[in-house]
Image 1 (tube, rainbow over the protein chains, first blue to last red):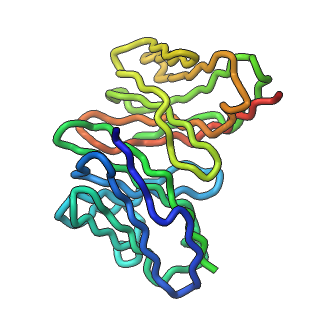
Image 2 (cartoon, each protein chain N blue to C red):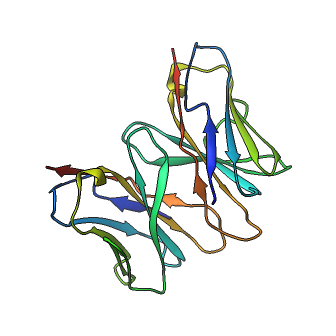
Length: 116
Length: 111
């Protein structure tokens, strides 16, 4: 149980384009999803917290207009990187939790984004 | 402030024990976690310990918690080449769903 998937697992896009990453909870309802960014050989940095049906809460220093997060259902959250630049290349990991029953976060396998 | 620190690198021989250390600053943390990340993959929860515990053992894994020194360790017995990965400790302060991750320790197991 508590499986989280991400799609795609890796994506290459050109500078200036937008790319959408999906995070799905497969066997549970996720009231809250978290989006992390991980640079090579570094730790995970929390970007934003999204609650189903409401606007995401972004961490300090994360551009809201650049990283659009939508959490429209209890099983799906999306992160859209708009007008991507090479410096946006990174490993993006989501996690999900059902805050009605647990504090535990369940992590997706990650999406590697390369912007050329 | 909240900060979690780990040593960056550890190398051990196959069959030896590995000890990965972590220090944290939030004295009110409730749960402390250990995650494993293999190359190009997400995080796999290995084990966790509640802050009112001193030790937890799960097969080859032993977690020790020294609350006075705010020090957490993960011991892997009989380390195998498949244990080569990055290990993250994380703390979750009370009343929050947010995890604070350490810097990660890269474990290399030599055959």
